[in-house]
Structure formats: structure tokens, C-alpha cells
Image 1 (tube, rainbow, N blue to C red):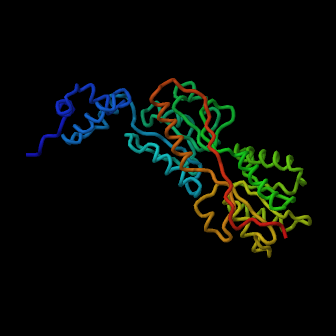
Image 2 (image 1 turned 30 degrees about the horizontal axis):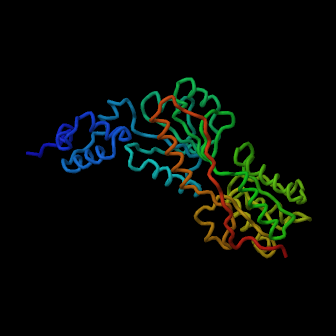
Image 3 (image 1 turned 180 degrees about the vertical axis):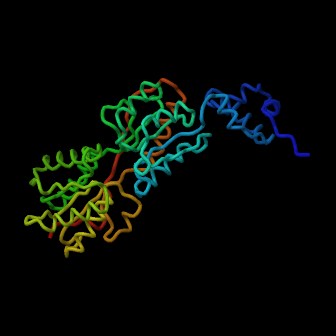
Length: 340
């Protein structure tokens, strides 16, 4: 005969507390004193009690899952962010579900449907291209207080945003190049209409103006955060009569493509032209030359977004539009040097 499973009554008896106190220790431990909480957790360990998460979620009318919307899971940029989100939910009983919104775009009403049909309790969106009508539906259905934007966002939408200081990162990049002696600095942007493109370009223009650096229209080259756009930018630069001596790229992947294209065209990095990126993804330090870049703490960003969403799910309808900006830092490596 199989041994009898421990019940919540067994835990209560072992801890010398009520079953309601045991339930609070599992669902809302902050309401208990540290002593009582430890007493209950020790009793759970001693009795071998296992929480029936499915039954508890049903009783509490929740799904026990959160959804993370990622615009392209193939990009190395997202790995550390997803690791941070996972860390943020560690120790909770929430499962983390991930959807690639580029390869599987959300159907109309799907985001709201995930809430109303009981599939998820909250959403972290790294996708800044969600349709305004989708977000309007979230407001109308009363689920907007369980959505947090991370890294990217939709302008005008009243949702909390966890982001790095994009404009300051651009200012740091331009300042670094100027301090090396560069005055002719080009910029390869992100995609048109993207909020990160706008913020990073704004910071670049502000710092360029503050330092009274020369500006030419052809030195701002449209990119899209990809290797390919970096390679195309290299072709543009190689064809210029008045070439820049340094290039600030809006993303590390763009910088990698740019360096490869410049080297293929006969230029040396950094001897002939310096290159700086943005993000500090994992391979930035291993690239040849190692990439000077702006580091955003992606694990911290992910953890912060998870903590914010947990907080909002614990306090229904207590949503406040308070954004959090995580500082960035300059990481100097081998791809930048004084101009020849």
C-alpha cells in the first residue's frame, strides 16, 4: 500500500498553528512573522508535504504562469534578459512561457485572450511594436495592470517600462570617441520607428552638438540591429569621399557586421577607423578586435521586470506608471583607438 501523503492539516499540527496560517505561509508569507514562517516551512519539510499547485491555482482563480513576448528569440541579445527573468521568478510557483512575436505574430485579441481564458496571470513584453488596438483591448478588459514593458515599449501606452539609459549610453559612446581625438563620427541607427533607435540617436545628436563636432547627413546610416545592416553600412562608408574616422553603432550585432565589411574592404579596425557598439552581448569581448561597447546589465533588467510584474500581480488594480531606468557603462576594448 502506498504511503499516505501529508496534508495541510498534518503541517498545521506539526507547526502548532492553524491551517489558515499554513496557507498564508505558502501564498502570502509577508503577512507572517519571520518566526512563524520558519516554523511552518520546517514543518512542511519534516512532514514531506507537497503543494498541489494546480488545485491551489484553481482555488485562487489564477493560471500560475506569466508570458514573455520576445520579438526574435534568435538574437543573442535576449539570452541574458531571459536568464534574469527566470531568476526573478525563481522561488515562486509561476511558470514562465515565452513567445516569439516575430516568427509567430500575435493574432488580434490573442493577448487579451491569454488573460480572459485563464492561460496567464501577467505579461512582460520586450516587443515595442505591439498594435495600439491590442493595448487598448487590455485596458478595456481590465488586465493592463498586469503588463510590464521591458527594454522596448510603445509610445503613449500607460504601462510601466523597465529600460536602460539609452540616451546616456549614446552620449558615453560619442564622448569616448571624441576624447580619443575623433571629430568625424558616423552613426549606424536601428530600424525606423523603433523607440531604441530614437533614444540612441537623440543621445548621439545631443553629445555631438555639445562637443561641437561636425555633422554630415551621410554620416547617419540607417540600420536595423542586424549583422547584414552593419555590412551594408560598411559599403556606404567605403564609398564615401569624406570618410568618418569612427562609427558608433546602435547595437553590437551591427558593429560586428560593420567591422567585417570594413575589413573586407581593406580598412583596419581600429588603425584606420574605430568602431563602438551598444549592448555588450556575450561575444563582444571575444570578437576580433574585441568590441568597445556600451554595456546594459541585461540580467538586472530581466530580474527587475520580473519583480515589478510580481508586485503588480500581488496588488491588483494598484498599478502605478513608474518607469525604472537601469544605468549603462562604457566598456573599452580593442576596436577603438585615436585616429591615424
